Image (cartoon, rainbow, N blue to C red; front, side, top):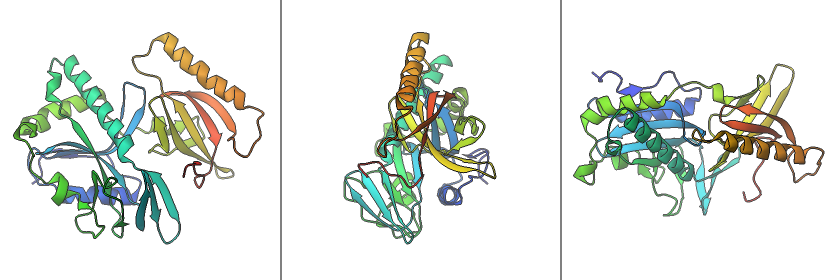
Length: 306
């Protein structure tokens, strides 16, 4: 029988492909300590960014943050740009490991902060290693050696990638001192995750009352992130892109106001400009992550470098 709360997921993912990937890992995870997992949650980083996480999993070999992508077809890369050539179309993304690495570091920082507040040594928080799980059953990967680093496929597939469990999560620790103990996974880690307030709430995915944003960022930088957004009220269907100017949780009032002024300036400068190479700024409003601008955008639009 699986230990209570060994797999923590408050509700089924709205994306069937994502839930299938989570179920794939869950079925392979032993019913024993120190195996523990938290699926489909979000947390707020000190930068103010609300990070969506697919899977945080503790195994004997360490603590891993796994990003799930399920695009089908044949995968090629040009540098860090990945192209999935499916039957219907080609999907282009940037190697998600880079952004997931930033999320891993921000999550560790928040856990260490929580440990100090609880009177626990922050040294108990191990390094959180990022990884990418390409879970489409019919994926054929032709990534080069560099882009394959920390990228895994299904255990029951023939993607050409290393297997997510047999070749990664199920391995013993490479060094004994890195081993995750049952005490840490059963008590300390859940306590720290509760302290930083991981949640299933989707309020940060709203822009006003009408617009709903995608849970995974389209693009991101140290002080901003872009998310695809859509509005469907029965009569009007629109697409857009929301840029959120992140305000650090530790920011002074002066720094917060400076960020808001910069965002407002960008919005105001773009008003009245009509050029096919410059996107229209439609609306400015406050978001829980910081000031935000809604731009006109279609999901098929690509960056110039893509």
